[in-house]
Length: 410
Image (cartoon, helix red, strand yellow):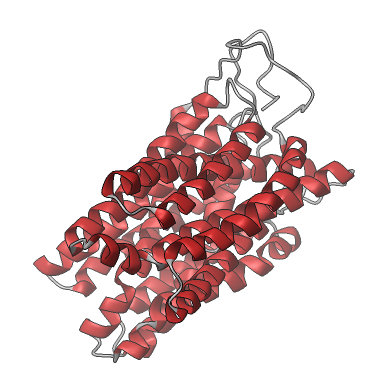
């Protein structure tokens, strides 16, 4: 049975504990790097004199490249152990960020942008593979805590970016400090990731021998949940303050709280989610959280005042706090190689891009309230899919490796 549904005794080794610490650091670094880049986009825009349209293309290009990199990661980890790929990718991520800080020509910026997009996607896929794998070894829910760390990193990145921008620090110093602080720590803890490999960590498949077949139909079902969740999150982050300001006539100081409330509620939920799952079971937590998210988005659409909408965004954030982590855990039951997790991760970028891209044009054709009906509909999808997601979590992992050696060493 799933480790997130029933408490089962497990021997927690020192290696597993070190792997968990290493993964906490990876999730923090990933969130900090991404948050720092987007928080300092105005500086990059001013340096290269980008128009709003050009900047929009740049910001959309990054998740597009990351999504493509995530998709191919499932094939790469059949040849290279995921802990090695993760270590290289996270270092490349911060190297690209540092280059962006120094870049004074457009070709150098684009090169670093591509490098970061690819590295970010590979880290995203492999760190989720590791989190799901380690949870299987712990035999209890631990995966949501990694996302709580990611959320904390985003808050830290926003605060640090605001402080350094106010102080007038050059971009290369801001990114350089992150590089100098985090890269040595990542190098130090990186070898411990081997203890979070999927399945048996000691097996060494021959080069080219590992062929993994993962059924796409259940991946698509999980992907629909992830697309829906990240669409709602993207619609809140990209358009929430605009909706509260323009539609509900709130001052900018109030409208700015839309995504802040969403993020704060999500963080609070993630800090307690693993305990709730261990206490009440994944099925009940998923179903309740999905309903909370739906109520939140209904409150946003029908809000008579700004404060009702802000409460709605907060409810949505609190409700969605467990959806993505448990969706990845469900993907982890589809095979023992982690490939399904990597493939499912691609759908997070689909949702993010659609949420950012569709709300505005639909609002132009009708109204922002009508545009947010899409988020309500997708919250309904999550509610309807909650049962099948929880059933998937209750099933044991299955391996579907078409190879002479098992797909369990990655």
